[in-house]
Length: 294
Image (cartoon, rainbow, N blue to C red; front, side, top):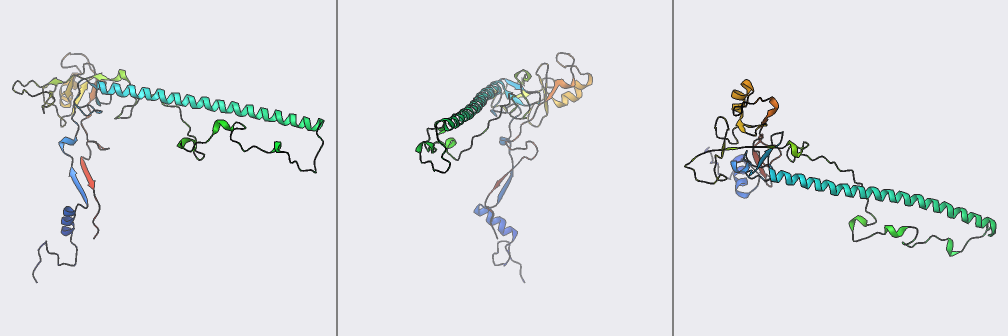
């Protein structure tokens, strides 16, 4: 019996090759592809704008930002805190006013009840076996009495409908957190970074267009995403981790200024990652499409 080719469709079994071929042609299934270089942020780009930094600063955790972008972020968060604090104080003041009104209403109710009882004792005869048909004693159905004029429902505003529940605001947190690491961030903790440009007289391209823009301040090695880098806290110079391990850690002296350094003065730079939740770990993107059922 002769063997059929892979493209033979006379078989009773829907083979894996046929399923894969049909999925690729029809647009079904999941495409898996390794993320390319264009999808990864460069090591010298801001973590907020994803553009090359004009005035770079770095946090103690090693995240690089453009000074203008991170200061604008901090100011925005401070303004948001001020707005939320005003709303919280307004709600708190409203609650205090409502409690005072409830206490005053209870006091007036007790006073009216006492006056009514006194009037019945003095001038009104006891009518224990007679039904009272006076309209004055019936509760009012109006929305404007008994303080209900301040809590009128509105069917055009969602927050004021009869079924809506009031949301209780919590006191806002004054602390500003780093947008990348989530740790507390202060302006005084930002450290200015000094990149050393690659001096190539033959390359007339602008700095932004160049592939090799910066180099190590000590060894003059070209810096890129594949080269682990670190920032010296005292001067802001960018060096490679190889320079830190082989040169700086021998005597803990700055190679350019000869000042004394410590372990805290070395800030490893966080290298560029993708836009996914896990960076530099699984550089793989998946595009899920409808599954073709057999």
